[in-house]
Amino acid sequence: MTTAYNKFFINGEWIEPEGRATLDVINPATEEAFATISLGTAEDVDAAAQAARAAFADWSQSSIEDRKAVISNIVAGLKARGDEMATAISNEMGAPMGLSKTAQLGSGLGHFMSILGILDNYEFEEVRGTTKIVKEPAGVCGFITPWNWPLNQIACKVAPALAAGCTIVLKPSEIAPVSAYILAEIIAESGLPAGVFNLVNGDGPTVGAAISSHPEIDVVSFTGSTRAGREVAKAAADGIKRVTQELGGKSANIILDDVPDFARAVAGGVAGCFGNSGQSCNAPTRMLVPKSRMAEAIEVARAAAAKSTVGDPQAETTRLGPVVSELQFNKIQGLIEKGIEEGAELVTGGPGRPEGLDKGYYVQPTIFGNVTNDMTIAREEIFGPVLSILGYDDDADAVRIANDTDYGLSGYVSGDSEHAQSIARQLRTGNVHINGAGPDFSAPFGGYKQSGNGREWGVEGFEEFLETKAMMGAVAAE
Image 1 (cartoon, rainbow, N blue to C red):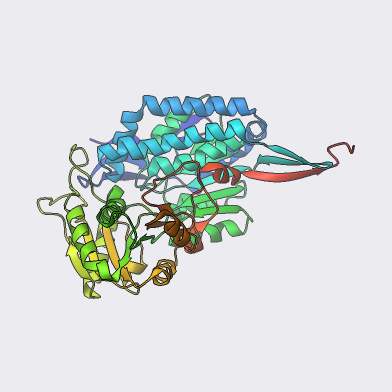
Image 2 (image 1 turned 90 degrees about the vertical axis):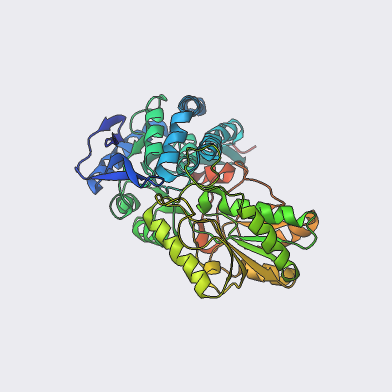
């Protein structure tokens, strides 16, 4: 039995879409449909953008207290419907329930709660001599979000945009849209004025392209593949829109020889790579170890991988669920086979499903040792539970290998604290996790090079939704 999520939320109402085409939403654990959505059209996007434009005049002038009240209501709604949201995320993209209830739901909540703190302290006006510098809402925002952390990657855009006084047209991933629908229901009950937030489901080539190019949309924020990011930027270029992008990654995890506990660092790196079934753009997918300790690293990694229980996302013991779709499964299988073909040492895992799982898009947790940085598995973003272990000669060689990539989203360094910080400063990435440090919602998130531009999270992410106005002569001269 499937549930229909076929309406769009436009101008404060749940409405029937312009078109009648629908799409099945597949549970990757069962390979069966559990929901349907409507596929939007350019006309649906136009209706949403016009509503957002009309609502901007009032919402952009709303008080900080009014914005905080709405965001607080959204937080309360997410908490009240937390189990439902976690179940939806598990069903739509395969995350184990333990991960859905903690990291998936928690990260979305975290962004809304973090922005409340920013609003308490942010200075929207500054005086310089006789000039007043004013920070104002950037305008109507178009958001195109992915499936791998569905609530998180919507929340880290919607929360700061609402807080800044912007209005929104959201297109969530058509692969994992149910969590976005539930969030829209929560927002509909939050007291937000009609037209400030609008939801249109659909695919990238139709709805995503219409959002990117729509003349009433001022800001486009996209999270997804680097390939799709290029298309978004091109579509937005004619309108001279502000475009922020959080794209792919191939993050290096450098384990230094002076790390206090080498085995713990290696095992932690395996867990970090395999988390969310490897479907994180900032995953530490390239582990760099001293060449002299390659054999030791391989054995520790092999033992760590054996603890990665793969199976039904609803089972309490499951640590890894399926990957999100047949398309992703086939891509990952092809890259695993490519690693074997190019001569990397297959430590554990490999092609095919794990033993005993003949249905569902399950991938064997796979580790390759003695990988070189010119191999395909070290160059391309695999987006599955596949780790490459590379050896380095010295610090300079480690930094060279880490930076030898088209990407620059994140990095990881483990070792003596001062030594690790010295290496971190040399990495061309937007984020570096030192000695196992986790995410920080108050810190900016984003990348260098082909990992994107702009920042999300924290004050820097909030400021992506503000324009700066200089009002000369606004302050009387002394």
